[in-house]
Length: 472
Image (cartoon, rainbow, N blue to C red):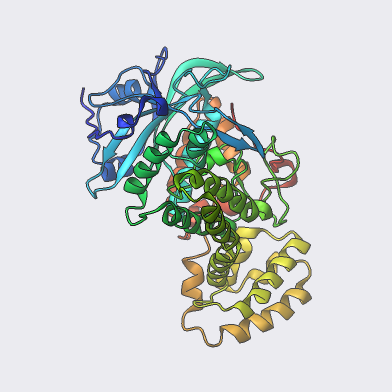
C-alpha cells in the first residue's frame, strides 16, 4: 500500500457507548474523482496511487492504524428532539496528528449502513458529495472555520432516491465531530459518567484552558458567535442548523441544503425541508443562541448546585446576541471599508442592506463593487444609492486604506447555487471539468480572475435554484 496516513486515534479510547465499531461496506468499483493534495500535505499524509486511494477512501480497504467507528449522538431537528441519531452513513476512519500538532478526524461519508442508519441505506450519491467538496473547500479559502474535503470517490454502484443515481463517498476532515447533540445524547440518559468523560475529552481536545463547564460553554459560544457572523457576512445559509450539526469546535459542518444568497433578501430560505423558515438567512443568529441554550442544559448536571449553574449559564446564553452583534458589526464594517467600526456605523451598514433588499441587488457583487466604484450599477434606484454613497464617503474620509480592506474582505467568487447545480449535472453525465474548474477558481476567491468572470454572474431567471436538498 503506497498511501501513508499517520493515524493517532483517541476518540475510540472513550467508553464503548460513545460509538459502534465496524468497517465500511465495500463498493463494487471504486474510482478516485478528486484528492486534495494541499490538505493532505498539511496532515502529513503521503499520497498513494489512485487505485490505492480509491479503495481506502471508498471503504473497501482499512489502512494500517485506522479504527473505523460510527459515533452516536442525539439532536434537535427543526426544534424536535430525537434522543438517538448518530452516524447513519458515516464512519470515523481515524484521527491524525498533523505536523503542526493539531488533531484532525478523517471520516468517510456515504460508507454504508451503521446501527444508527434508522432505515436509511447509509450511502451518498454523487451530487451531495461534490457539493460538499466544492463548498467546504470554498469556505476554507474564504477564511471560514470549516470541515474540509480530502477525497471524493465514485463507487460504481447506484444509489436510489427518487431515481437511480451514481453513488460516491466523501472523505471529510474535521477538528472533531463532537456536536451539541453528542452532549445531548448522554444528558438525556442521565449518564453523568459519560457526560463527564465527554466534557474532559472536549476540553482537552479543543479548549485546554477551559477548566470548568462554564469556561467550555463560554468558549463554544464565542466560537459559534464568530462563525455565524462570518456566515452572514458572506451571504451563506447553512440550511439545517440542528443541534447535531453544531460542533463544539466552532467549525461549519454538514453541507447538505446549504446555499449562498444571490439577490439579497434577508428571509431567504433554500432548504427543501425548512418549510417554516426556521433556518432562514436572517434567523441563523437566533437559532445558534437557541442551540447554545441546549448545550448549556446538558452541562448543568456536571455541577452539584444545579440552580446556581442554571443562573450562570442563562446569563452566558443571554449575553450571546450582543456577542454576535459585535462580530457582525466588525465583519460588515470591514465590508464597507471600516477598519474599526463603532455602533453608530450600524445604521450606515443596515442602510445599504435595506437598499439591496428593496432592489434585489446581488449580495456578493454589490459589496465587491464598492471596491472599484461600480456599486451604483447594482441598483435600479440609483438616487437612493447616491444618497447613501454621500454618507459613506464622508465616513471613509478618516480611513487610511479602505479599498485594500474591502478587497480582502469581499470575495469576487463564491460557489453560486446555479453553478454548483450545473457542475453536478455535468458530473452525473461523466464530465468533471466544471467540478475541477470551480475548485480551481474558488481556491482564490478574493483574486480577480478574468478568465473566470462568467462565474461572477448571478443566475438568469431560468437558472435560479429555488430549493436545495440534503441528499439523504
